Length: 414
Image 1 (spheres, rainbow, N blue to C red):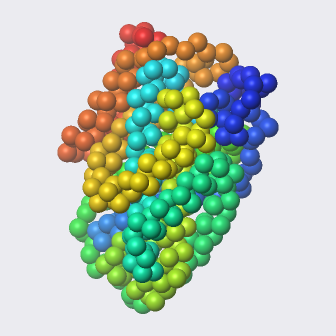
Image 2 (cartoon, helix red, strand yellow; image 1 turned 120 degrees about the vertical axis):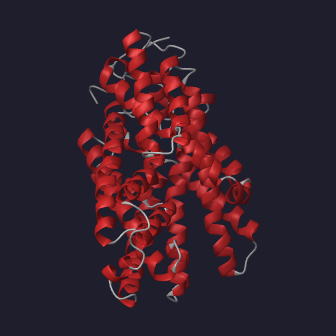
Image 3 (spheres, rainbow, N blue to C red; image 1 turned 60 degrees about the horizontal axis):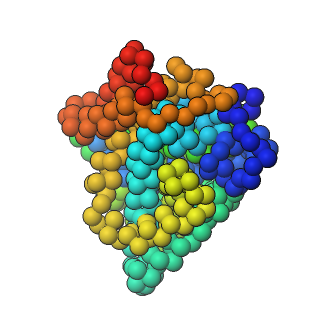
């Protein structure tokens, strides 16, 4: 880690290095990082996106949307993976260099708030259908699931690895079985996709693919900073995003066309696979929720300077307590706030490559970079207000403009 941020190795640190760079001694190999990143991309909402693609495009259009959108998404997340590995810093610590020590509170608040919100939604996404299937009360299962998910997230990176090792194979095996069975019973993939092709354009489909995970992908440095080198970081991220997202799209697309549902949980129940469905739903959400809460804990840690273990427990308790309310009332608001995450990521990427000295060696902190902060705000507004183009791309373009304005005016540290 010769070119990463210097640190005081004699100072006591927590196992997840929430307030400092990850040292060489804590770095991990290809397969450890690959399973963590693959588990990160196994996101239930991506199956809903897959259902929209499957119900609106023919088989060729579906393949092209996944390919083109996947390339753009992987390039964005791969760049963040490179930066995270090179510096060993979490996204929030990178933001301290890009937005300033106080300016980073805005980016951390957005990251933390959205990820804690998605954690709560995820808990309810599991507890509500599972409680119905098992004949339990929604709140009882919500509390149990929330506590268990929080416990593993608070344990840190090691727990993320273990959960991913267990859940990833389960999701792949059961998901592929369900998809193949649905395709066979539905008359083949070409026939299934042909039933509703033409409802959306290829351009819209590409937008769906990019938007499906670009917000979550902004948190990539939080996990990939543990990679032994930048090669491992970039390859595991790119492969995981391509493979993981594409699998989720396929599960949703085939299942949506076959049953009219957009979740593999209900597809498998329709196929008489209730217990496997429960396992897949739990494993899918557990991996995503662990990563969401881990990110939320790091974000709050940056603001409060309290170690991640404790901020993760606080985040989990809040997310669990609000889970059912969030599920029924807050998804649309979270989607709006998610538009603020791509501007954060693109500004960090540009700042790293144009001002690399801020990310290597000793660094003198400053308070606020007003141009980069403006890029977040105006970029998010543009993403929500513009009715053309792809929201995440619009947000990043606007944010980049403000970054370059700041560079030209020479106000990097004000």
